[in-house]
Structure formats: structure tokens, C-alpha cells
Figure 1 (cartoon, helix red, strand yellow):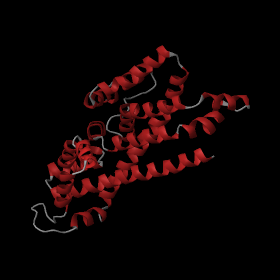
Figure 2: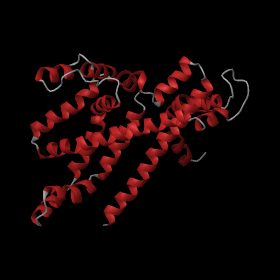
Figure 3: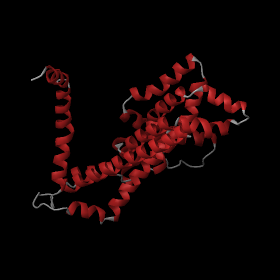
Figure 4: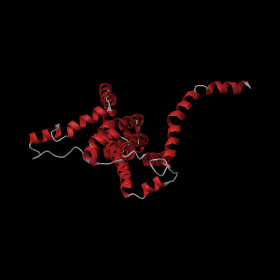
Length: 285
């Protein structure tokens, strides 16, 4: 063995435990999931693609998947709309305010998702804080139904996932050359035009990164979807849980898991590839 190959082997030694962990924690369970999904019956009687045919021939299952993807996209868009004003305030603030805003953004991440979800149940309940405040102010005549609704679930997920969007957008905005915005102001551009033509295109990588993080996190947020959405709204995480634990149809639940994983991963890669093309176009311009 040559000295060069010996050095290369030594450099690869730290990678071996990580590769073994990746193999044991991800690759092997994924292979097992694929194998389980190929059985026709819950008794593992016969190999067949019947579970996938069952999914794509069932309008209810397809609707559950599309609703879940739409939920992730809706929450990601809502957090994106909220993140830019927050990022602009952060960029225009002094050191003390920046520290305070960073603390407020990071604070929810230090709290369990379960705790934050139960807090939203208290806020959105029939006798919750929002209904009580609105009734006290005379704005509502009767308690509104906020809990176990699509809108309530989107609101809760938007607050929970907002830090995942705010941090990348703020980072992109801080990297922006201030001379560009000052030059646009000198040419007479309004603030809205500066944002649309200068700030938004140049901070697009951070916005796309945040969008992808929030989309994936919101679409797979089993706890918040189940507690805030309730049993009236069936989405893929709860659907998989029902089939695996309630019905104990492991082959179908495995097929659901793989389809859901491929759908989310495919959207993430597609949006990522599209964003890279857009960024290259902006750089070329």
C-alpha cells in the first residue's frame, strides 16, 4: 500500500461511523418499508403491487395526499409573507433590537412543539382566549368555531414554523449590498418597486430555502395536524398512523409512507432546481 493510499484510508476513518449510522437508521428501514409495501395482504401472504394500485385507484387517498401538499404550500406561503416584514425591520434596526428580535425568533424553537400546539388549542378553543376577547369586545355575537378547522390549523402551523422561514430570509437580506437599494432610491424608485425589483430577486435563495424547510415541516407535522385539526381533517401523517396502528394494515401504510415521502421529496427537489435556474437568471441579468 502506497503512502498516498494509506493517508486516504486514514482520512476516511471518521466517515465510517457516520456511514454505518446512516445505513442503520435510514437505508435499512427504507428497504424494509419497500419490502413490506409489496405484500398484498396484512398477513404478508403474497408479493404484489396491489397496495400502490389501491392508493392510485382510491379518490379519497389521492385527496388526502393533495390536501397535505396544499397545506404545506399554504403554510410556507403564509410564513414567507410574514418573514419579509420581519426581516426588513431586523435589517433596519440597531444592535439591541437585532438581538431582541433574534431572541424572539429563537425562543419558540426552545419550546416543545407539543407545548406550542396545546397553547394554540387554548387560544382557538370555544372558550379560548380569542373567542373570549372577541365576545368581551362585542365583535362576535357567539363563539366562533376556530379549533378543528383548516384555517386554525394553518394559523397554528404558520406560527410554529415561522422561525424556519425568518432566519434564512434575514440571512439573505443581511448579505444584500446596501448600495443597490440606495442607488435605486437615487433613481427615484419607490419602496415597493425597490422591494420587487431589487430586494426580492436578490434574497430569493434564502426565501426558497425557507419555503422548502417550512413546506416539508408543515406537511409532515403529525402532532399539530392531529391536535389542532382534529379527527375531522385527515392528512397523510394521521392517515398513515390510522392504517398502521388502528387498522394494522402494514403493507398499505408502508405504501402510503413511501408515496408521501416521494411526493414531498420530489416537490422539494423540483422547487430547488427551479430556484437555482431563477437565481442563475438573476445573476446573469
